[in-house]
Length: 211
Ligand SMILES: Cc1cc2nc3c(=O)[nH]c(=O)nc-3n(C[C@H](O)[C@H](O)[C@H](O)COP(=O)(O)O)c2cc1C
Image (cartoon, rainbow, N blue to C red; front, top):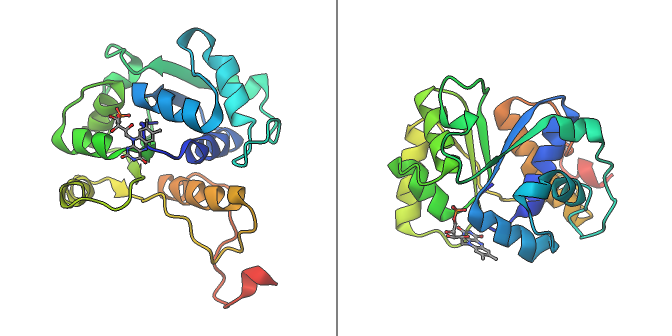
């Protein structure tokens, strides 16, 4: 998670990964702690990350606490790494990982990964994912986009990443904010090949989602 707006997208992706039985290495950038605090009121603390994560993941995109049931067994499959810990597992290509999802991705993170800056664990792990030729999904959230960011996104695409803007669609019959969030999260999971039932897929019939 980097420090762009869109913490509900990250929560939905995390829930989707856990529902699919995946294990997750979680890296929350320093700036994304601010967006999480701003958007949810939850301060993500290194020493209490399990309870903070549970409070966050159980919250709906509309802010309602207890919308989702997050078990202790779910949390057992999450390993949290401090963003400043450059000796953490995901900083090395030999650490086992299937790929990496940056949700949401700030333009600063896009720039850092495109340039190979590795200024923190998040950027280092993304660079490792690219060099190891593993899937990297970058869900950028900014609007409008500068020419500089557009060029950096092209560089990421050329390096093999999937650039997946946090851009909800309305053809899937959304009626609540959570539906729009889940659409983006579902597309992120699609790009990573993780099965889910987060949104209603297009079936080739206009207006089908309204019926
Ligand atoms: C409340 C808040 C919302 C922000 N929203 C965005 C955003 O939507 N997109 C973006 O690119 N940056 C956004 N930023 C700025 C980034 O947090 C900032 O560029 C930061 O350096 C990103 O660092 P990181 O990539 O290490 O997480 C926001 C900052 C704050 C405090």
